[in-house]
Image (tube, rainbow, N blue to C red; front, side, top):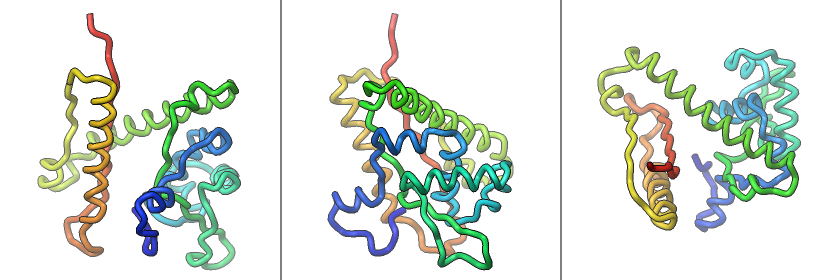
Amino acid sequence: MDEPGTPQDPNEREERRLHRLDARSLRGLAHPLRMRLLSALRRGGPATASQLAARLGESSGATSYHLRQLAAHGFVEDAPEHGKGRERWWKAVHAGVSFDDTLLKDSDPEVRGAADLFLHEVANTHTREIATWLGTAGEWPEAWRRASDMSDLTLRLTPGQAEELVQRMHALVDSYRDRAPADGTADAEQVRVHTHLFPTRTE
C-alpha cells in the first residue's frame, strides 16, 4: 500500500503509511460515513464525491460535506491529476490509521466517546465485509473459495505473549506487501485480512 518514492528508513516509511490518531484527528474521523469514505478511497483509489455517493448509496451533498471534513483533519486531499472537467477528485493521504487505546481513557468525555464510536464502527465494518463475502462466495472461482478463511482459535497467554503474537501476525501480513503480484496478473485480487485478539472470562 506504500506509494512509489516512500522513504526507505523503516520508521519514516511506517509514519508515511500509517497516521497515528490523536484526540483532534479522532474527532474528525469518528463518524460512520467518514470512515466508509476514507476506506473507499484507500481501497478503490481516487474518486469524486458523486462517484463515492453512488458506490455507498449516499447523497453527493453528504459525501461532499464529509470529504471536506476529512480534508480539514488531514485524512484526504485533492487529486487534481485525476480531474476532468469541474468536478473535484479526492484521494487518501495515508494507507491506514494507528489507534492508541489511551484515547479510551482521555480526560475529555467527547474524545472517549469518539474512540468508542471509532472502534465499534471498525467492528461493524468487519461484520459487513464477512457478511458480503458469505453472501457472494458462490460467485467466486473455486480457487478463491478454497483460499478464504474464517477461523477462531483459543490460546492461554500472558499480556506480553498476546502483544508479541499480534506484532508477529502483523509482520507476517506486511511481508506480503513486497510480494504483491505485478499489475495485470490474471488471478490476483485485493484481499481483506481481519485479526482480532482479546481476552475472555472463564468460569
